[in-house]
Length: 209
Image 1 (cartoon, helix red, strand yellow):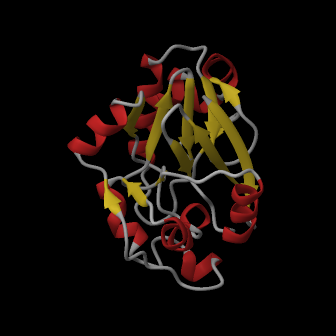
Image 2: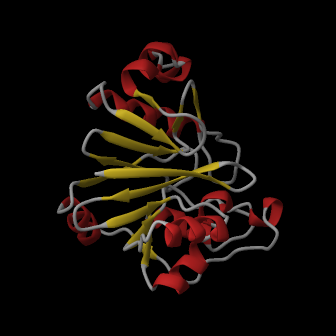
């Protein structure tokens, strides 16, 4: 597996280009199509599909142009449909130059999960930052979107956010091996061992209160 990280847009979203043996995936392609496209062309990378951890504008802004340019599928959790079609809920009416309501998308189904499983890609539902937030596990890598950052967690005060839900979702991280590398939606990477040792939001006093 090869991973490239691009930091894109005003909100510095981490876009990950994950190259597996038979599949090239864009995880959270951000909102700067030109910068991402320049990188893809310069490195002769043609993506096969897009998976988003959630539907906020800073993570999905480039999706319509990517789908049109490459004719590829865009996948997101079913609970994010309410976010990606609504400019107020996806915050494009607040932060974007234009309001965004996605028209072309695939809501992740059981069949899709089996398809992803065949490539060693595990999709885990982790609501809280948004109703349909997910994290993605590939081998020893965990792409956490805006669930978990180094030393912090995602906000819960946007539309559809929930503190109780994000606590429940963070608790799911306890079942993973602590040596997993963490690739968050913003900021520097980490690993679960470091986060469980130093991140106050993974402390039992916070999660179990």
